[in-house]
Length: 170
Image (tube, rainbow, N blue to C red; front, top):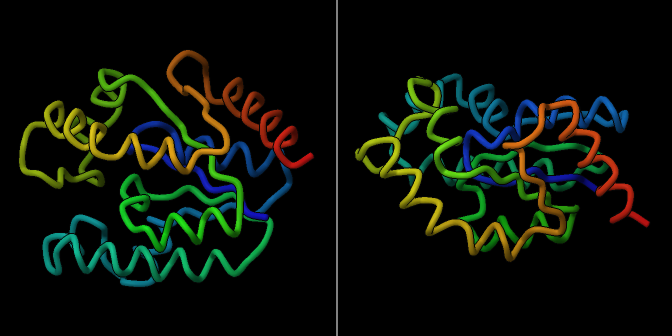
């Protein structure tokens, strides 16, 4: 059974994923890193050259590949939940962990990060609020476990997450 870290960008999926995988002695993968490796382009380059629709298709292909594996901790892109097929794949092959943070913390974390382009062309603050509003019901529907990453450090969050995963696997 895989562990899928879902949530909006900037909630700590990649950072927490690495630490959690180490604590659980499981392999770690990041869907965004696999997309970049597969395509030979950065995510902003893929979005600029081919658009969001093509990016989401590549993202779904990567998820399809990793969902056939077992025992991974997988950090996913924030929009992976937009596809019903992706949601079904994650539910059928693993435990979904929704990492949350308040919008103002997310904005602080992602502002100025060139690897996290805006999708809407609006300000980072406006985009976070708009996309969170649209995606939160999908995250909530999919989540087996919810962890707020805003109040504690990475190690503390990882310990909480590992305990919740162990409880869920029983």
